Length: 219
Image 1 (cartoon, rainbow, N blue to C red):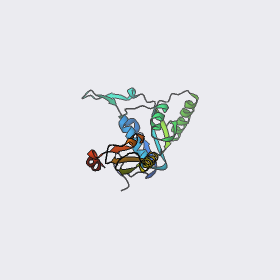
Image 2 (spheres, helix red, strand yellow):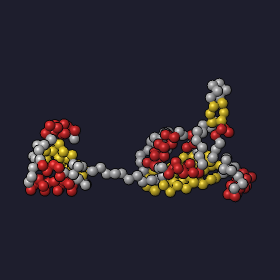
Image 3 (spheres, helix red, strand yellow):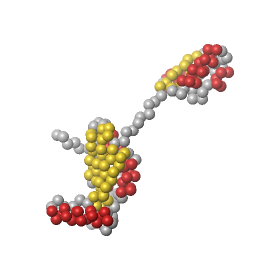
Image 4 (spheres, rainbow, N blue to C red):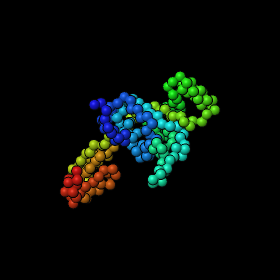
């Protein structure tokens, strides 16, 4: 009952729900577009300060695991891998969506005593540069990136007859030119005439009677 079937690029949970998301041995199977969407979805469902943990093969030589179908002669990876990641490439992918990225090279050996000894020896050889990273894994952990939403400006509509020379009109222009820095300002005039129109800030949208009906229908 606690399990749910879904797609990693369309996670069926609300935003800011999980403290940790784990994705193990998956990203090497995903196309570029699906991978980008998957990272975005994981970032979405993570809580503030949530962590994303995962693994993927390191520096895999995809051609070494290539097989050919005897019936259709199509060539493909025996486990369906379509990507290979170096530490640098994986960092670049993760860095587009997440923060505080930490990636380590790891060899996952057998759990029995001999396997553990072999694992320790291999890890030692990795550190001193005697073994290449093939048949190893990249283990990564990173942090949710908070995406700041840009708040839309509020709108202000001014209605006035004309913009001829006059104290009231000049004062209105001063007000509008000040307000336009914080709001989207619309000005509707009953006449297209008015020498003071040239003093208006260019950000102010001016409407006239011929488009009054269209203006109101579009708001």
